[in-house]
Length: 275
Length: 356
Figure (tube, each protein chain N blue to C red):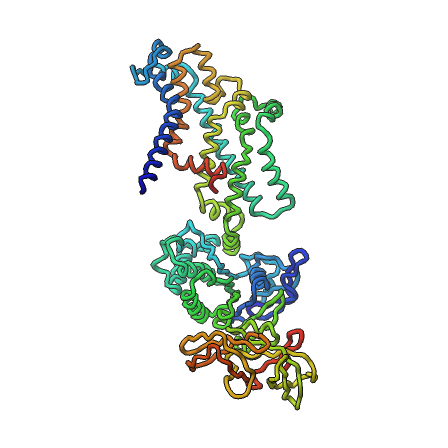
């Protein structure tokens, strides 16, 4: 490696590290605050841990409905993820592999739905959920989140890229559409399904706006919505607030740490950087 | 009869990919569809497989009309140009795939896969994934996948095109052996006339969606029905020269070359009028050098040891290829005289039809 190149590498590394620090610092600060005593939490400006206690966490767990919100979040996020993957995959498969009248128009609609901001649909969706008596239910949280054009597009691109002989080989081997999709196409690249599942799960886990609207009962809230209630319940108690925030963010942080590469892939796939 | 097609046609919109194709392929024969790209040979194969619907006509396999039968029910197996192996499955599972779909008993699956692996010498590769195999091995797996199904007809769609030259020759021999061993009907599509000549019992030459001629390889080589078949079969290609019938005595006709004093003679029993413009065709190996004949200037001589190819030009600028056996005299840049025996001079009319 030439000295110029080496210098370039060092500069880039330092810059990346600095950017990473900027990103990580709020998380770190939140964690520091959460392990301080309530009296110290707002006042201390030390960037090193000056005390360590879990009182705020115990408060958060036992004096709020956080555990219930966890169940709601995990339940709805899992169901949405499974359904989004299944529905989008089947939709993409049909658009990509099956010749039927109106196919292009349908795909056009899927692409077009990108141009409609989700917020504009909120009122009609809310009225619809109300008419269906789904306010304050899991179904109410789940149903509007099942529309995921990006997942359809990513799957369609993937299916389009599979050589047509692969499909024909299965047809000649006696397989139908089910065999083609589930026994050949999907196993060709489980990475796509993993990536789409991660992106969807994280998206639903973090979703705030819709669950905030459709749920009014504290028992049905998801974690991000529930956090707003903690503020009310505790007044401004920074340590406890941060403890709840830490616990709320934990599954996503864990997902990032465990599936680091997959998450990066997922973001690149769904943003079109990588096919 | 192994496969019989009657007036089979295929249209894509207003484009006629195949017109009124009729043929009979006897059980156990090795038939080859050959022709330039876009001639409809692959479409025809895919129609026999059931992967393309017919726009007309009838397809019969083993005396059963399969025109409207699903691909999997036609008792055919296909080997694709790009192998189309399932990359996530082992070689064993690739070969067992169709049997598992048909819910065959485990021991039968095992037996049939092992048998196919033995025939194709794939035994040691059974646990491997396709990505761990060479091109030739992958092609053998694709063939193995066809063998385990014990089809009535094997269909090959340019299966050797992705292999290098040496491997192609080797696989050609293996396919011939396999055909003898299995005795099954095989239909093979290629654009390579050498593959067609070496593999086939029966060649169908296609152009523009029409079968130009069908027959045994040497029959097509020696006795082509038209100019296209004459030019397509044989490498290097037949030489064609424009002539006029200058005289006729019984069967013997004198063919005066355009823009030259020289004439060739040929034998024609059918109608051919003096003064008719025709084209003659002479294979490179049928030219004799020396004596009285058509003078040509040798531009390049390719010496291959046992044989050499002379790339020459007539006075009127027509390219001529001459094949010489044995002789190693350097002829580059020299002018030589070419002649040919009447029986080696083929005559074609203005539409490219052979005059006999």
